[in-house]
Image (cartoon, rainbow, N blue to C red):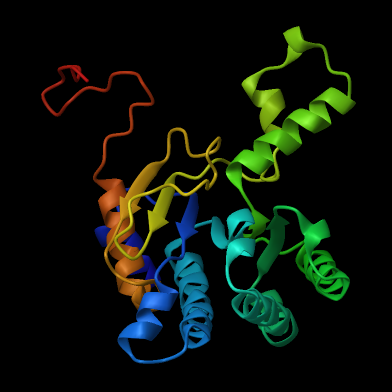
Length: 249
């Protein structure tokens, strides 16, 4: 099935997909369930998306799991989300490792509970040589905070201002081991970027869908990739249309 999708339906497959996994709370509310039930359903769905990315030939997947702004949520919800992270690292790590997933963390790890920090570091160490799919988990992550962090590191390194380039600056970002995302997906109908990969997504294609995250499955991901393949990516330049004429825009 994977080969058929690639050969017949996909004009172009994004190397790197980033996702804002939005709508867990609304999914739970529609079903008269507690919010944490929505978060757990969203976590379960992520397993399906990981498998689909590997099947479709996507090489990098970055998911917005917990932002720097999420600390403002009620403490019981924050505690529940931290519990989900701990559970995933305990119960899902072996399967992810077997599937060839390389786990990486982007964001500020130091604010997390020391026990969770150790589990994250152990997961990164265990899967570091896997190459089927690189999965960046954005936990305690914010785009502005990432840029501030990069500037701080550059200043501390005493790098001369005149030598700073976009390429050098990118080396100090949390995502320096991954290419910039080709496609950013946001579920639930919201059309904000929400402080997510604001440097890296400068030329990304954005795909907004009203589908709530727990319901965004393999078929929906496939449709997003098909949509991506139909877009013209010019990066500020000019491509030729089918008649050989340059685009005006």
